[in-house]
Length: 189
Image (cartoon, rainbow, N blue to C red):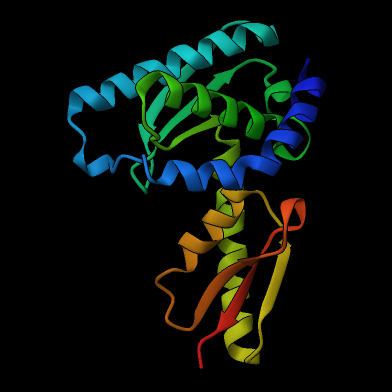
């Protein structure tokens, strides 16, 4: 099941950039929502996630809900033997997040950022990406040349952009197409 899920995700990811652009018009600002609306989003996303998890046979799990740094809803799954939910290089987890987000958007009628994590896997990956971003910014500014990073998912690229958005030494841009899309860190002259 997880392998099929990962394979299907590759097709979904190719269209994700277009979908995200379309959804930006309908995206709700987390700061402008009432507590009732935020509760509805969380309840809907958790219900969708629980329905999807039934197909993975992962046993009893706990879903912790909290707000991220950018106002996004983070659902962190904990339990025994959840590696199947992460998959190779986090691909299954990315697919799970995409699926839950897409279904949640359909049910609530607008886009709201929902992040699915498994035992803080994405949090650890985020810390690594933020360190990579800082290192790349330092390298770009000291060497006076652009630094091209490895191809990344839209979520990973966003982490790099956000990590460097307030760094006066550099600017970031995404380049490439599909699975070869990557971030370039450019020194400000």
